[in-house]
Length: 268
Length: 280
Image 1 (tube, rainbow over the protein chains, first blue to last red):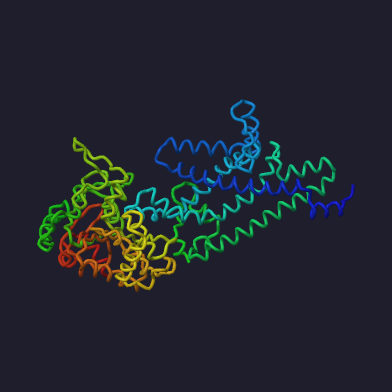
Image 2 (image 1 turned 120 degrees about the vertical axis):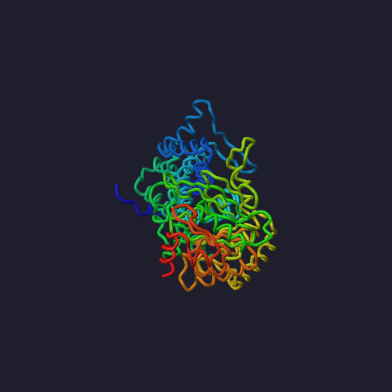
């Protein structure tokens, strides 16, 4: 079989409806799962720093489990496994005119639970990257620990989180394809179905790859715009130090890698 | 009555110092008795006793590692004390005494409440880099004292004017010089209307030409009657502003008294050795 240019071009510019729907689904799965994952990650990161041992153990155990097992296995356990055991079956959920198939719910839950564990580690590194003197200054003014975290430490940590968060979302867009294993009709499964009807495998998956790269490229432009805006608003925190250094300098322990804002400033 | 130290000679100095201390003392701003603090095996505070009357300015001097910073940090419970008794404005700080006279660490809310009365100025400023100068100052009044935002910002501007920075209210810390940052930090501490101000080597991280502007603000604060405990190597400031100079070495207060006495005719040879190093 030779490369069929006209088939390729036609598929690229006039994709069947199942392709378009699959791509749209990929995007909203990724957006919702990432948002939930960020929320869960923040919660877990705070739990890991809690003064209550059970919360620390719970968060640490969760992160260990999730990061230690493949997403593919998690998806199957959550969707098929829980249903087979009679634990929980994802059924169609209708909210007004919108109805969400069970498999989509399971997909979002899987991705969010998985992403939460990774975001927790990113948040933890970001929180640790804020100089300890910041919380001390806030507490010396009479703020509670919680207030110091919310109004002083987290706003600074979030700026550090933006670049790796962009990275995570890029990954999320692609990782949705793994949910094809539980029969979720996103872009990859749509392509597979189309392939089994036409057998133009190379052309079909080349087009699929192009779709993914268009999505991730569009996202990287959005991310660059977000980072530019953050910089413009007086905060030169994000701009000056490379991400890797910002997150991981000062060694491996959580003992506060010393890159407080003041020190960043001093270094210039 | 202000007195300091545990060695006999320091005790005598302290008594003499009382003559120069303000008459209308009321409750003492600081009353530390037999404070001990260890970092691991390092005995960083070794039986430190210090009384500071309200309105008094005390300057702590001594070589680095002598315990000045640790003592200041204990005074607003940024560090726990391992032994001893510490009263700020007449109340135990960080601890609560139970019926049997044992000290238990206080709950977090109570510690936070007590810290409102104590301003702390850090060597490295610790301004909030994501907030402008006026937001830095207004944050705690809004979040802790529940002052309406507009009013807190008004007050922030007044405080900025007081430290000579009324034109910098919209500037971020990164846009300010070291001296300006430290002045904003002082204004930020004052915004909580503290009764006691602690300064941890406030000019040590500054370029020499910026030291003067910060000391000027502190001088004015002292002349307004603020109670201040200042760790500093600025002997000129100590001489001109302090009611009492307290010399620390190896975690102990070895000598205390009016500046003229401690700085010009120190009794202790370690004080003499220290002074000959910093004055030349």
